[in-house]
Length: 100
Image (cartoon, rainbow, N blue to C red; front, side):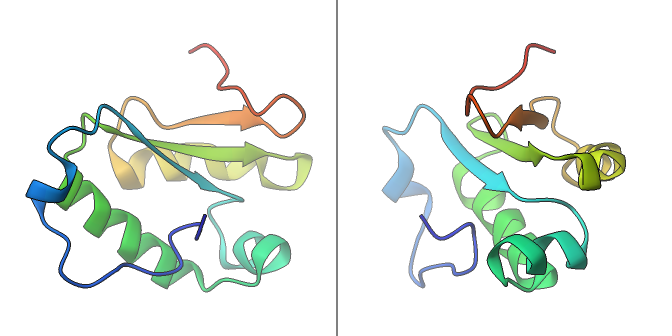
């Protein structure tokens, strides 16, 4: 698990031909949340997730965000950024996506 902090070079559509779904989780959608939880640079994570979506295809990528009290206001911004209907928060206690 890299939390999209890196993107391997040389990946193409052919590497994901048999993939049904990929889940990418985020601790939040602000530099403060990204740094607070994982010490990651948000702009790098977002760039890598966008690259993953381009390579894998947006119908097979599910971007989830850990839901905390301190990042609840960031969920809509994440949904707008990714323009994915599947972007949703999930509980950090159950690790299961909430029903939309």
